[in-house]
Length: 395
Image (cartoon, rainbow, N blue to C red; front, side, top):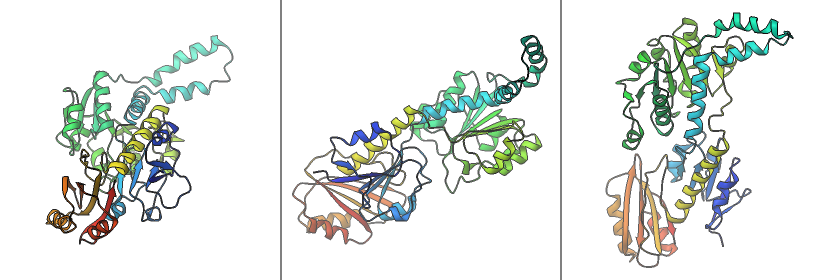
């Protein structure tokens, strides 16, 4: 009998759902009390955070459609799939660079309006005399600024190097792992202001957080000169009204984004300096399958073993199984909790075979292998410890 139920709230690629076969997790599209939720862009709210819910796995990178803070308070682990769609987004950034540098969109639009010309002897000289208005610039030798050097940003930076561009990167939260992914040709900018000042093209790859909302704005555009701005991250990070203002002022040459807004659509209908795409950055068969497989595997591993990888609100934890009886304990990250938990286990005559404790911000996560059998009464007693959020028996 399956132990866990998983409910999808979005269309999840079949190859990912098939990964549930052979596990202790079963798919149930009707349950109102799942152990796990799989989601893409569907908006979740507090009504989805039922008492039985243990994990939410997002088949994608952004989690602004998930109430992460509420999940943390309830001890619900939220996963995402960093890097699974990185190549798809990178390739669309390449298309954006070409659109911004070579007047491709305006050129196509110009030719498509020549349907009245029926003869080649009329069409050819007309095209020859008008093509100069679409003269663009080569990417080679220009400077590409990349804001955010995570899974996607680092791929974009490497792509820029392969295009013989001068690449400048800025990421105040650059991890050691991400730094290793960068080629030596990528120059670090001392500040985001410096990056905007020296770049011909800027590609944005930062998450939508309260601290990043509107961070790409007029203060940075003042530093620019005929800059092409590309946003394939999230619309919240760019102040679009400032974009339109500084296109008029000439600081921005054009704006290519995967996130249309009414103001941008109005501009795009009049001018060719704003090019909009309908949020298709990760819309490839390969990316959707990669994200689905990764999302399912991470959730299944957590439900079955308690191990955590790629959570946005809990630390990464991996403990090799040393006994048949495992307990996970989520608690508030306050002093003396490990001692209280160890004491309580001793009072319950539960012998620790192996244990790990890792904290992240306001919470701490414990995985504990127990040598002897653990009953539900012991789980209840552990749950009653002050500052413990939840306890789970994983047999």
